[in-house]
Amino acid sequence: MSKTNCTGIPRATGLIIVEVRNSNPNGDPERDGAPRRRRGDIGEISPVSVKRKMRDLVGNKNGPIWLYLKGKFNLKEERFDILEERDRKREEIKKMIIEDDTKPLKEKRFVKRYWDGRVFGNTFLEGAEGETEEGTSAGKTTKKTDSDKNAKTKEAIALKRNVKTGVLHFGLGLSVAPVALRTDFTLTNKAGVQEGKTAGMAPGAFKFVEHGIYAIPFFVNPTPASKTGCKKEDVDVALELIPYVYSHNPSLVRTQVEVLHAWYMEHTNQKGSCNDFVLIDALMPKKNVDANKPSLSRSEYNIPNPIVNPDIFKDFKAEILVFRDGIWINKDTKDEENSECKITIRDLMDLMRQ
Image 1 (cartoon, rainbow, N blue to C red):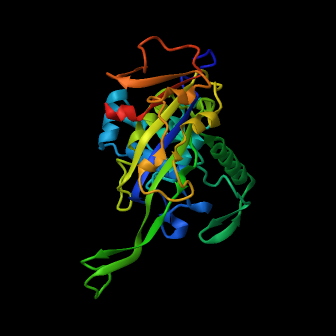
Image 2: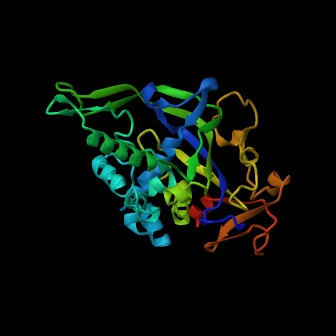
Image 3: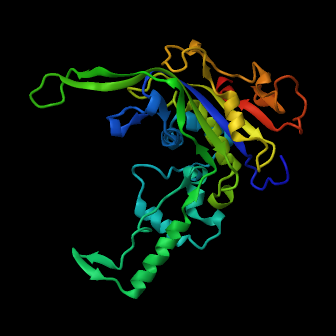
C-alpha cells in the first residue's frame, strides 16, 4: 500500500452474493412486513438491515461469533459496545458527548466505547434541531433566559459536531432477476391468543420470496477514520462478520438466506486504484435465460468466481488470494504480493470455511 496510508485502513470495494429460498430477507414495515420490492418486482435489501445484523452479532457478548472474534483479535469488550440498541440511555450518551466535546478524538468516551459509531458513523442527535426560545416547566411555557439559550446552543453544536459518516458503507441490495412473493400463508397458534378463543390464526402473516439471488455492494473508505476514530481492527471485525450475517441471525421467516460469496477487493492505495462500478459489474451474477422472470433455483444463474475463472479481471491486473492454513496466499503461487496489481481479491467466505 502506498505512502498515503495514514490509518492502516485500506480502500476497498465489496460485493456480497446472497441466495434466498422461501424466506423473507428484509421485510417492509409499510407493506405489512412483505419482502421489499421495487418496480419490475426486483427484490431489495436495505443497508440498515445488514448493519443491524452485524450489530446484533457484536452485541451478543455470549454468542459464538463474538467469542470467536474476541479470541482471534484479542478484543477489549469495553471498546465494542453498540450505540444503536433499543435500551440505550440517550440522556447519558448525550451528556457524555457534550462533556467530551473539547477533548482530543482518542480521549472521547463515545469514540472509545461504540464500535458501530466508529465503523458505520452515527447521527446521534437530541435537541440539536428545532431549538426554540421557549421551554416548559411544570406544564407551563416559560421564556428561556439568554444563558439558557447559550447553553442549549452549545449543546446543540456539540451534538452536531459528533455526527459523522462512517468508514464502512453498504449499498442497496438488489435481486438479479425479479422475485416472486407468496403472501397467502396463514400462521396458526394452537393455544389461541384472544380471550375465549381455543386457537389463533394470522392470515397472510408468513410472507416470503420463493427464490432469488441478491447482490449487496459495500465500500471501505479510510477518509472518515480520522474523524470517527475507526481503527483497522474495527474494520477487520466487520469484515469477519459478513459471512455470518444471515446464518447466525435466523427468524421465523428468514430460515433460508445464505451468503454464497463475499467478495472483498482491496485497492493498492487509499485513494483508490480501480473504479468501483467496474469491479462490481465484473462480479455481478446474471440469469442465464428468461432474465425478466423469477427463478426457481441457483442453477439458473451464472455466478462469476475469479478464483475459478481469473479471466473475469483480464482487463486489468488483479491478484487472487485464497485462505489456506490461516493465511491469505496467492492462488497460483506463494510469492510476495504483486506490487503492480491494481486490486487484491478475496472471498471472505473462505474465513468461515476454515
